[in-house]
Amino acid sequence: QVQLVETGGGLVQAGGSLRLSCAASGHTSSSNAMAWFRQAAVKEREFVAAISWGSNPIRYYSESVKGRFTISRDNAKNTVYLQMNSLEPEDTAVYYCAAGRGAVSTSPDYPYWGQGTQVTVSS
Image 1: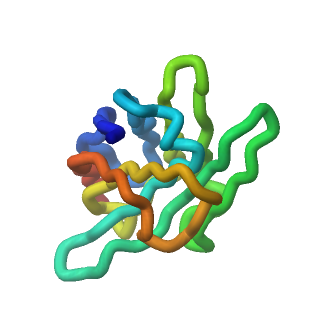
Image 2 (image 1 turned 135 degrees about the horizontal axis):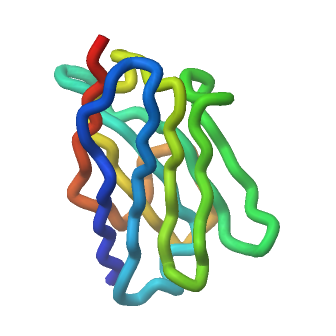
């Protein structure tokens, strides 16, 4: 089992920045691939960014956040980060961290999920 805890959400004005963190604990060898998803009110959960394991990880981004968000990880701390810049009201959502042992994926088929952290961007 892997436990994921997200922190860093909050309220920010449009154009501002936030950094989300997701700390993994437990059987962390099962968290090779890690990702961020988000779910806004009355919308389905959508992919935001993902990162693979290794010293030269592969990164994926959704088109809506590419160029504004950056995913990174600190393997020694078993933590993945999402740096969010130039935030827009449309980025308002609950952000979820996900992890899995397999290849990195943009689909929400990860076995482990955090509880989510709210990000609210005011206009």
